Image (cartoon, rainbow, N blue to C red; front, side):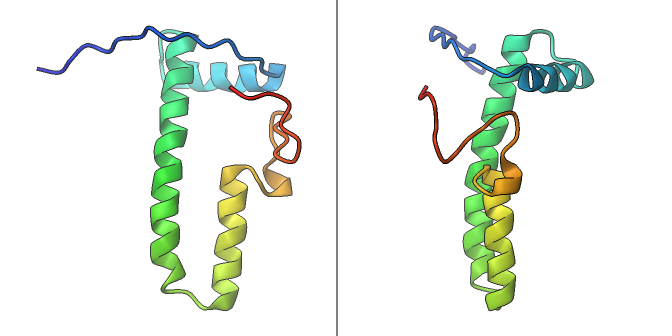
Length: 100
């Protein structure tokens, strides 16, 4: 039997109105009961995706020519939010304003 999820840690974070709206849109589309649960699920999804992305990047890097590797690097930066086009919701990777 699975252990029940114990939630004892709380974090207070600031978000832009656009990010709150995007989270709520995702929450309602995916029928998630609470905003807190939606944020937890999105964070877990992002962490898992980052691990998978790194794994596939390593695999693909060994199979691609130079131009394809450059394109892959740009895609990875975009997905990680470090490419200029990837700066959504006021996320500034050059000058992070707060740490969590």
